[in-house]
Image (cartoon, rainbow, N blue to C red; front, side, top):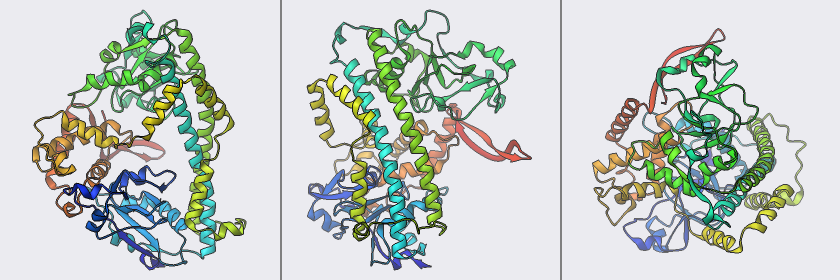
Length: 587
């Protein structure tokens, strides 16, 4: 067993001083963790920011060649990518290059992926512990022969390519549906100006309770849920993916249902998440058992002569017009949230029901194909995990894995490129036929505009949200020389406000059953690292005061009902009983 540094050269990059704008006006790719996360099929060909020759000199000419393994040490610990071009990086990324032919870079990539969970555990703690270059250099590794390494990498690479292909198929189908929706129901749609502008409440059945939220407070307690029964209880997890799905199963007794039958959910109802991850929506399937909704959901029973449930549900989570209304009505709130009043008063154009029904049929066909791809993706991921576990424990029989001679002779990077070519092969016939049909109805002007938009450089969404947050608060002093000064981290009051902003965003986005603060600090660290100067790395580490401020935010959220304290459950004698560990969950 040897150290990783015995096989590889390992070093980090750096950040040129942002006080000199000329450092960021060149053509040398400069990678941050966000570039690793957004890498196409795990390879970085371009970066969000570029630096000049002088900027490179400012970070001691740290330049990594094409084919370098890039490893994230901060925030998104363990994320990896391969450099598809010669590039530089910031100090949050390690560049790992093999010293000789004793180790294959593809094998090393999959080896790191197999150790991701243990690396994440190394980076956890009350105050987030980042991994260091020294820690990575000292990792112990016992690689098999180079031929076995290539066979392992080849096998896992083939399965990974299929996984990427399935993910790309699913993404294409989502983009296809959005294009169809915007083309048929956007401002450029034929007849749009003549459609009535209505409130969502105008589309509900004309009866009491056709728009409702679930029971509040003591009317329905967590302790009253059972693991089986005849009356299901629906929550955020059933709609968070913008399509109805069963996740955690919750039930109540028939006796309890008699008290809460006014909250019954019906087939074809539209449910909308109004707490936690807000604005997600789904349509209740026809085979739903007897069920009610929790306080975290709003439910709408529609007049189906006026509105198709699939049309309304898709509009709620994907119509820019509706999303902008939700955002404007939440401005200034401590925590983003919806309520029944906001949903009732939200406006939308009501197209002819025939057009809504037509979109619904397209949606169902695409959704059917998506389900097939999703099932295939799940099987492939399960296969990958099983193969990876056996490969790196030495249990995988590699004898039957045959590589063609020319593939063995290919460089590691070229074989990675082959994987990308395989993923970019023509999309499956069902998807192609639907895409061609859609393209026939999308006006050329809209297609040209879409291409122009796609060509624009993208600013990370997290950066836009933070800058928007600051721009709405004139009391925050904006300094012209650096992103960190722009973020206000030099001012204690502004620093606390931004921490609160990041905390609220994390709380809103969190979908985990248990809220763990190390996940918040990982996200906050990531937001911070992307804008650090190398010389300010120590100065801008989170402080004891920052941790105290976040503790206060937790207690504030508990007081406001956004977070609840409970205890964990343990299995004793095949029964679930309350444990002795206090845990935090969404309110």
